[in-house]
Structure formats: structure tokens, C-alpha cells
Length: 154
Image 1 (cartoon, rainbow, N blue to C red):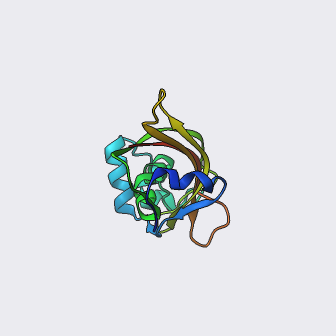
Image 2: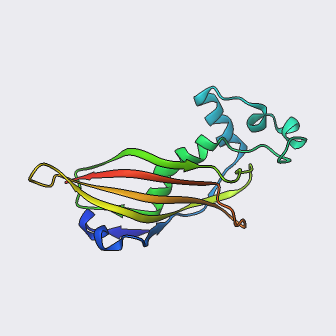
């Protein structure tokens, strides 16, 4: 995990990878819990037997499950210190180019796209836009590409 002592330490890293998470196994139990939490019980996610004859030959994770893992993936990839709080401000350009099959391992790779000081006269926050690529182990096509926008308050 990379550690940045302040949000300002990110500023010169525009265009660079600022962290890569640990690998995370996506198992059927996690998929089922997400289905229960979101009331999305589509067979392609939760019916193991039926999914065997489906388009992917196995159950796949919900796209939004993959996206929702962002906070944990960030936490294992990098830490920004010197803040009073950090919040998710939003997302741009979310895509799911390839499915995450149950049993796949995924990880997040994070590249800094933008760094902006936020405030009226006095800077009280830093806003960053990051390109998040969720990779599948052993695959060339990513499972998810999104641009999270984070705010770090001082």
C-alpha cells in the first residue's frame, strides 16, 4: 500500500498510478449477500445450476457489486493522511467491459486524473478524480473502469 502524508502529495502525480490493491476473491457467498442487500436475485448471479448453462458457464458477480468494492480496494491500494475526512463525491464514466465470474480474483489499479483545491479563498478540501480499473486475474480485459471523484477535507 502506498501512503501519501497529505492530499497535496498527490498533486504532482497526475497521470501516474497512485496505488494497486491486493487481490480479492469473488465467491458465491459474497454474490448472494449482495443479491440479498439489493433485491437483485437474477439467476445469472445466484442460481449456480442454471448459470452453468448460461452465457458465461458459471454465475457472475453483479456489475454494481464489482463497483461497490471500490472503498475496500482503495483502502488496500493507498492511504491519504493529513485529512479530517474523505468522502466519495461521485463517479464519471462507469463501464463493465467484462464479467467477473464467481471464483475470479480481482484488484483495483488507481491512476490520478485530476487534482483540484476546493474552497472560497481558503482551501478546505482537495478533490481528485481517479481512473479506477478493476482487473481480473489472468485476463486482459478489465471487469470495470470508472472515474471516482473523492474529496479529502483538511
